[in-house]
Length: 420
Image (cartoon, rainbow, N blue to C red; front, side):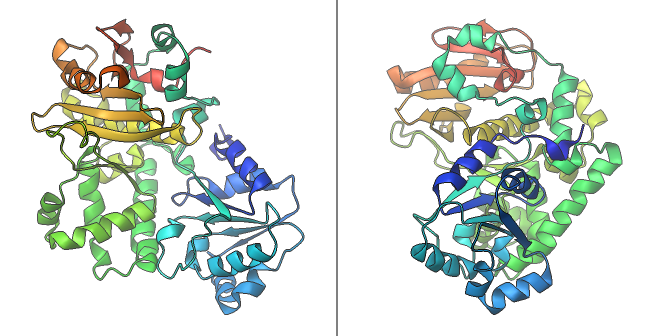
């Protein structure tokens, strides 16, 4: 399979943006497929593409920003890796204010343009940002999955029973493969080499270029420690002790990794509903292939049932990332959070919808469940009352079962592979 030509589920959103907005911003980590997607959406329109990864082009952009962004007035100007010259944003704002035609600029960036140093312009009211994540499982299968939207619009039990159960080995392969296009056709040591080289490039080169941090050499150590704690609650004091830096310095590193699209943060839910709720966020690395590479975990290790404790956090990271990806194109509007209280009752993932309803999700590596596995979901149900739409325990087993009032058990594969 040619993974570089897989259709991306945000493609229609990007096309719509170009049809009604002057500036479209396609943002995502390096090598997730931004250039390929821009080629797909621009092939039917008059366009010109330039990349600031070229030092000559970058020098030209910095030399005369307005002349640079005015070089293709007759169509769509695509500027790749625009974060390398944030001064262009001001020139684009001035140009758009004079000419509000839609579809004038398509900017791609491997960093969050709104938080760049030297970026004095957000393009508010002139641009729309689309986030491109690594491949979702649905994209690799050729489907547009929508777990949240379908749960709201269909009868839950028949819908969940449309999933095709997978084996533990199937889930392990999905975790090891990750979602980066260029990693899909590699295996074994070659896959590990790809991810190591990728992280070296991003953390040693891009991070240094974008940040003003004094000890950028610590980025590799910090990211590796975060990999070992992915999907866990982030305690800044504990992290600073592990690394040996002042606690006050940690936020700068975390924000930089966030800006580079290498991690996602899940805020805590429930501070307004439960005084016992813990306020600390979860940090989730954006790709399990990278996590496994940084931790030295391969397929054989993870597939061995004797190493079962290693699978749980990786499955949680994997499922959370799949739903984050779907959030971009879902028919439902929702926020993603997590819950833990001082009694250690927790819910791995909370989907809070714009109308106030909540879907709560627990993720287990086990192939069987017990009543105690539902303690966090039941706690949340008691807090929420009628706002609690349903709670789903996702596991590596095969059965779909009701488990009490608005509680269900389903295979993890229900997140993407469902009938209809």
